[in-house]
Image (cartoon, rainbow, N blue to C red; front, top):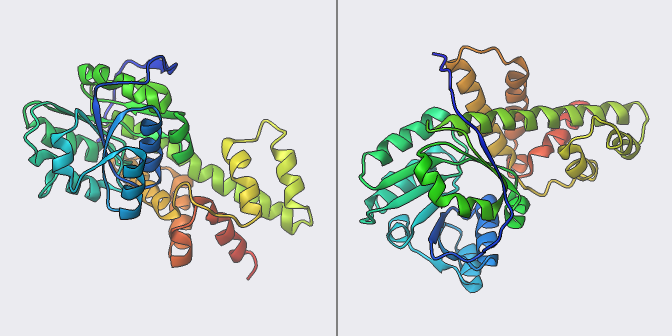
Length: 315
């Protein structure tokens, strides 16, 4: 069923004046993006509480001044705001609702800003369950940008949910973001925007890969092709950041291939719910799924799709 959203948009350009805050900020998730957010908050002399599964990273954060907690519940007891940044919907439900989850805490006032990439229905599901607990607020808060952007405070935050709660934590989001968009009261709207934006990442990366392959197999130095591409209006952030790495077979991850496939699956689920025909997204899903079948590739950067397509053309 198609749902029409009506919302106002507020753009806030981040110019940080004061870096200190009495607010205790909990971060759940020590993956690449979560790590970037934690490092940024620590750098700004913020009171940071951390829970994650990577023990080595937890030790690193503790040495940097963060307080480490054994589970999500105990972290929630000592936090005013929790930023959740986990892998998927199942992980999000686990840290929120299962034993020793956030919702088991006795904290009477808590705001949860969820940065996990989920679809709008999944975010709304979590919001509704959280909302049943008096004093708790769930904000759908996906972000655009990778771990380096988080560390430099250059994410783009997309927020939907309770406006008063958003105003309470806006100053925190401004610490990790160069732009913050509030897109309305309905939880999940911001997640739909996030998926539509990530759709571009998948398709642009495939286009860049095929352009490099066509140039290379036509006898053209792919380095020359990339240099020319990046001097034209056809250049993208992906061609500028990832292009040379792809040519050099450097797939150091800023975003895993397996997670890109997960996001494309969410896009296709959304398109089916809305009865939309997205042929390029559908083809992207097939290609990324085939590439992800290799255990060697799934934990590399999503731009490794170039290597997969090159292999198909070398047979």
